[in-house]
Image 1 (spheres, rainbow, N blue to C red):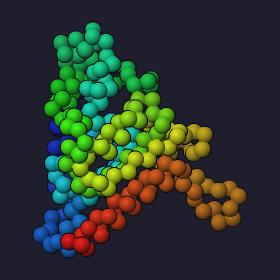
Image 2 (spheres, rainbow, N blue to C red):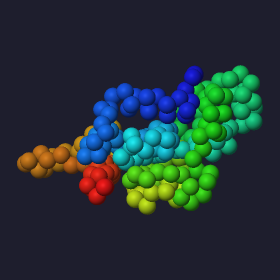
Image 3 (cartoon, rainbow, N blue to C red):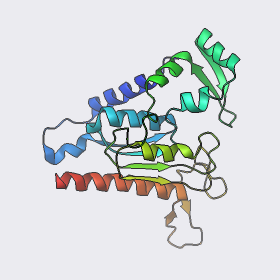
Image 4 (cartoon, helix red, strand yellow):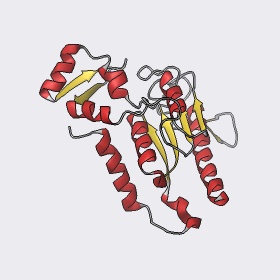
Length: 223
């Protein structure tokens, strides 16, 4: 009931400030920086942290990223009577986004979301200098595929890639090819070595993480 973008961003920064060792040495400056993997609204939070505290972020991977969703995807689709109820009563459970899930939506989330919109400034208007990787299924039933493309246009970094698997949906789950959770490895039953095979989503995520880690290490050496 008290959750907002501002609070999630502050909590993330406070957490990292509390657990990541501080150092004044340039040689070990990367030990204070994390690669963020944000799913859905977590990607929005990651973008806000990367802008506010770039010293904490060495790369950002967005999974089904939905920044500005409170205004563009949620509020824009709600009936007027539901909007009035949220603002009048401060809270209402609503179903939206093409899935069966019910979400608790508060007036504070909507109002705070408007203070933290990130896709309004046009091309290269949002200051993020670290590598950005966006993995977004063409089957996403909740967030249009235009959203990751807009993120790529909006961030300032040129080290940005958008990866769009054909299947998977918003949860990036593919029951046709993988085990129940897309993060589980596939195993080649015909192989004597039983070498684990990665699903398309795992391959995209592993490559994205590797890109972020390698880029930050090279950047540190150049500096």
